[in-house]
View 1 (cartoon, rainbow, N blue to C red):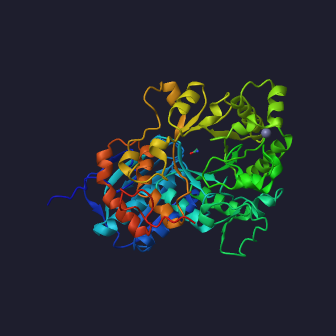
View 2: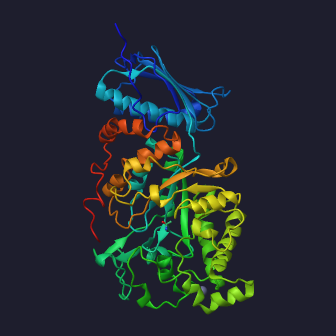
Length: 513
Ligand code: ACM
Ligand code: ZN
């Protein structure tokens, strides 16, 4: 009798090292748990995944062990795990709860695949750990708002793919989404806009109360909401990094507190489409801008344990600095020659504040212009050059070039197989520079992503490619593609939506609201 040998494991991202000798372990008798006490959350998660796969938890079942590796002989590090499926039992070994969680995710995917084949789990020995420490996903909740339950569902998707950073884009021109107790107008006004053809109609002086009319769109998270999301993510070993945009992309804040802008609060200039370059910025000349932003960041930092705090810095409409008497005076006082240097002054001041709270500032690659703040991490989006320059200058970087990492782009422009070609370490980086690449990130901007169904279809299946790039290093894109069919079946069985037609330019039901 020949023992059937599965050609590969139905797991995405694929494990770093695996051996598949052939044969299968049956769970007909159910499963029983023996987990180290520090893996209580992980064993609870696995229990729900077994139920999901129709497997009973029973005393006579196959033992599943969750072992704490005190001596890390396999070199698992702080995110790795070993998984052994043998004739008698299943053994997961990890030095950390994160590693155990990732091992449980691998097992979950194998359980779902075995359900469709109804032949048990393939015997195997897996030793797995990620290539990159930063496996990020940006979610823009400003342009469209998503509920706490939807954000949690998104976190479930990230966890399934072993992603570990949720970059939460909480504020932008389209709306301010986080309660700040010191500045209540941010959510009383800034969280709401009129729907009319995606245009903010600020000429409506008697802006209706939220809920008073269906023409008002928006929403925000209370401090309790934020704590709930952060805790939910943390249990799944995902860090939530907040982003508070400055000095640009700040219309929602400046509508709430017009005195903080370079231009006076002329309502006419606010008549702009969401996503367009903004006609106002936080003024770099007025002290009250810095006071306001420090107060806001103080509250934000108290809610988010993340070591990294993102302050935006992209696409600043600097001509407004040029045209502002306060900004010009600041440049004279500080001996600044250009508006790029003025923006740099702005970010450096904010960095001092962020550092004083024990956190590290992250900004988009435009923060290189006019001189990089001394301890800043650069998120390279306009291409890879910003990341290269920053790494060369000894700064840590996160690579998210729009060429491969923008999941708001249509699938016709950025299909899954194209994302699979992404490498956070660019050609020409020296080993010392490459060591500054923390990892990579996919970004989902939501100007044209109106609901959570569209969110899922813009993410999936592309996120599979990003996860495999960041976790495994995408050793074989063709082999990866050959695993997409069972992967999509897994998404179906978990009830996640995915884009079947990779020629789509935008989600089928894109509406302009
Ligand atoms: C960006 O896409 N403006 C970071
Ligand atoms: Zn100004």
